[in-house]
Image (cartoon, rainbow, N blue to C red; front, side, top):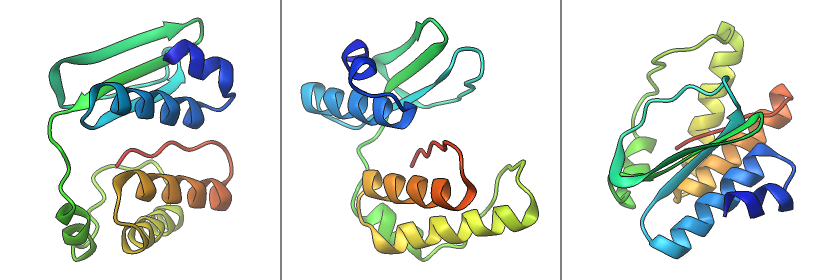
Length: 136
């Protein structure tokens, strides 16, 4: 799936979405995919047993894993009522405040994790420029 996605798409986000979707269809459950440059992707994840792979195609790395839990529809609804807690950031204060507000708006506007992720990523890319990745 990863090789095919890399031939079909030129952007990391599109490759990640395609690979994740193909695994969701083929194996069920919630699969997450992170794509980035080899040596420049750091991660710490909770994953299901026997459901994780880290690949490298030259300078491109792909991390694919199945989530430990199946998200329930009420999680996003509950998140809407919570205040954001910034756990870590290298952004300026103004940029961080904008990112929090954009995340809050994506949660208000969407009820599916994938939709929240896509809306937030597109909004941040439009506002801040460059390529951004979002994991929800």
